[in-house]
Image (cartoon, rainbow, N blue to C red; front, side):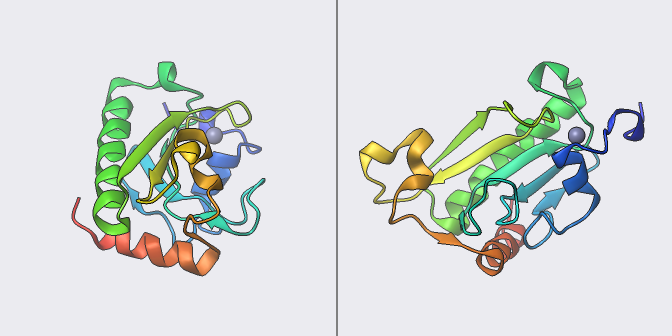
Length: 155
Ligand SMILES: [Zn+2]
Protein backbone atom coordinates (compact mmCIF):
# COMPACT_ATOMS: atom_id res chain seq x y z
CA UNK A 1 0.00 0.00 0.00
CA UNK A 2 1.43 3.38 -0.94
CA UNK A 3 0.46 6.67 0.59
CA UNK A 4 -0.48 8.08 -2.80
CA UNK A 5 -3.17 5.58 -3.57
CA UNK A 6 -5.17 6.68 -0.55
CA UNK A 7 -4.38 10.36 -0.20
CA UNK A 8 -7.16 12.48 -1.67
CA UNK A 9 -5.94 15.96 -2.54
CA UNK A 10 -8.74 17.64 -0.68
CA UNK A 11 -7.97 15.96 2.66
CA UNK A 12 -6.91 18.57 5.19
CA UNK A 13 -4.72 16.16 7.15
CA UNK A 14 -2.98 14.75 4.06
CA UNK A 15 -2.37 18.30 2.84
CA UNK A 16 -1.01 19.28 6.24
CA UNK A 17 1.47 16.39 6.17
CA UNK A 18 2.78 17.54 2.78
CA UNK A 19 4.09 20.83 4.12
CA UNK A 20 4.77 22.65 7.34
CA UNK A 21 2.61 25.76 7.06
CA UNK A 22 -0.22 24.14 9.00
CA UNK A 23 2.09 22.82 11.70
CA UNK A 24 3.36 25.65 13.89
CA UNK A 25 7.01 24.93 14.56
CA UNK A 26 6.88 21.97 12.17
CA UNK A 27 5.93 18.46 13.20
CA UNK A 28 6.50 17.80 16.90
CA UNK A 29 7.57 14.25 16.12
CA UNK A 30 7.35 11.96 13.12
CA UNK A 31 8.11 8.37 12.44
CA UNK A 32 7.49 6.24 9.38
CA UNK A 33 3.81 5.78 10.23
CA UNK A 34 2.70 8.75 12.35
CA UNK A 35 2.88 12.54 12.50
CA UNK A 36 2.39 14.47 15.75
CA UNK A 37 1.58 18.18 15.40
CA UNK A 38 0.18 21.18 17.24
CA UNK A 39 -3.12 22.81 16.32
CA UNK A 40 -2.43 25.61 13.84
CA UNK A 41 -3.91 29.09 14.26
CA UNK A 42 -4.39 28.86 10.46
CA UNK A 43 -6.54 25.73 10.62
CA UNK A 44 -10.19 26.07 9.58
CA UNK A 45 -12.20 27.07 12.61
CA UNK A 46 -9.17 28.14 14.61
CA UNK A 47 -9.60 31.75 15.69
CA UNK A 48 -6.02 32.88 15.00
CA UNK A 49 -5.15 32.05 18.56
CA UNK A 50 -5.14 28.50 19.79
CA UNK A 51 -5.22 26.59 23.03
CA UNK A 52 -1.59 25.83 23.72
CA UNK A 53 -0.81 22.13 23.92
CA UNK A 54 -3.67 20.97 21.66
CA UNK A 55 -1.84 18.21 19.78
CA UNK A 56 -2.83 15.74 17.08
CA UNK A 57 -1.57 12.21 16.58
CA UNK A 58 -2.26 11.14 12.99
CA UNK A 59 -1.34 8.20 10.79
CA UNK A 60 0.50 9.32 7.65
CA UNK A 61 -1.75 7.09 5.60
CA UNK A 62 -5.25 8.34 4.82
CA UNK A 63 -7.02 6.02 7.26
CA UNK A 64 -10.45 7.37 8.23
CA UNK A 65 -10.72 6.03 11.75
CA UNK A 66 -9.45 3.67 14.43
CA UNK A 67 -11.01 0.58 12.80
CA UNK A 68 -9.01 1.29 9.65
CA UNK A 69 -5.56 1.19 11.22
CA UNK A 70 -3.18 -1.65 10.50
CA UNK A 71 -1.67 -3.16 13.65
CA UNK A 72 1.65 -1.40 13.16
CA UNK A 73 -0.10 1.96 12.73
CA UNK A 74 -2.21 1.34 15.83
CA UNK A 75 0.90 0.57 17.84
CA UNK A 76 2.57 3.73 16.63
CA UNK A 77 -0.52 5.88 17.29
CA UNK A 78 -0.77 4.49 20.82
CA UNK A 79 2.91 4.94 21.51
CA UNK A 80 2.87 8.56 20.34
CA UNK A 81 -0.28 9.34 22.32
CA UNK A 82 1.52 8.16 25.46
CA UNK A 83 4.77 9.97 24.64
CA UNK A 84 3.03 13.21 23.71
CA UNK A 85 0.89 13.10 26.86
CA UNK A 86 4.01 12.57 28.92
CA UNK A 87 5.70 15.54 27.26
CA UNK A 88 2.63 17.73 27.86
CA UNK A 89 2.82 16.84 31.53
CA UNK A 90 6.58 17.37 31.84
CA UNK A 91 7.04 20.39 29.58
CA UNK A 92 3.71 22.21 29.63
CA UNK A 93 2.71 21.31 33.18
CA UNK A 94 -0.53 19.55 32.25
CA UNK A 95 -2.20 17.92 35.24
CA UNK A 96 -4.21 15.66 32.93
CA UNK A 97 -4.36 14.92 29.19
CA UNK A 98 -7.63 14.16 27.42
CA UNK A 99 -7.67 12.09 24.22
CA UNK A 100 -10.49 12.03 21.70
CA UNK A 101 -11.32 10.88 18.20
CA UNK A 102 -14.15 12.95 16.75
CA UNK A 103 -13.71 13.02 12.97
CA UNK A 104 -17.11 14.42 12.07
CA UNK A 105 -15.65 16.79 9.51
CA UNK A 106 -12.26 15.41 8.41
CA UNK A 107 -12.21 11.69 7.50
CA UNK A 108 -8.52 11.14 8.26
CA UNK A 109 -7.88 9.86 11.75
CA UNK A 110 -6.61 12.54 14.11
CA UNK A 111 -6.45 11.84 17.82
CA UNK A 112 -6.90 15.09 19.72
CA UNK A 113 -4.75 15.42 22.81
CA UNK A 114 -5.89 18.21 25.10
CA UNK A 115 -3.96 19.11 28.23
CA UNK A 116 -5.82 20.28 31.28
CA UNK A 117 -3.84 22.88 33.14
CA UNK A 118 -3.78 23.28 36.90
CA UNK A 119 -6.45 25.71 38.08
CA UNK A 120 -8.94 24.88 35.34
CA UNK A 121 -12.35 25.25 36.99
CA UNK A 122 -14.40 22.05 37.15
CA UNK A 123 -17.08 23.41 34.80
CA UNK A 124 -14.49 23.59 32.00
CA UNK A 125 -13.17 20.04 32.37
CA UNK A 126 -13.17 17.73 29.34
CA UNK A 127 -14.78 19.11 26.19
CA UNK A 128 -14.77 22.75 27.31
CA UNK A 129 -11.22 22.67 28.61
CA UNK A 130 -10.03 25.01 25.83
CA UNK A 131 -12.81 27.51 26.53
CA UNK A 132 -11.57 28.49 29.98
CA UNK A 133 -10.72 32.21 29.75
CA UNK A 134 -7.67 31.64 31.94
CA UNK A 135 -6.23 28.95 29.65
CA UNK A 136 -2.89 29.54 27.95
CA UNK A 137 -3.44 30.59 24.34
CA UNK A 138 -1.18 31.86 21.63
CA UNK A 139 -0.59 32.43 17.97
CA UNK A 140 1.91 30.93 15.59
CA UNK A 141 4.98 31.99 17.57
CA UNK A 142 3.78 30.75 20.96
CA UNK A 143 2.66 27.42 19.52
CA UNK A 144 5.98 27.00 17.70
CA UNK A 145 7.88 27.75 20.87
CA UNK A 146 5.95 25.09 22.80
CA UNK A 147 6.51 22.61 19.96
CA UNK A 148 10.23 23.23 20.19
CA UNK A 149 10.21 22.51 23.91
CA UNK A 150 8.10 19.39 23.48
CA UNK A 151 10.39 18.12 20.74
CA UNK A 152 13.46 18.70 22.89
CA UNK A 153 11.98 16.84 25.83
CA UNK A 154 12.77 13.26 26.53
CA UNK A 155 10.07 10.90 25.49
ZN1 LIG B 1 -5.99 12.22 4.49
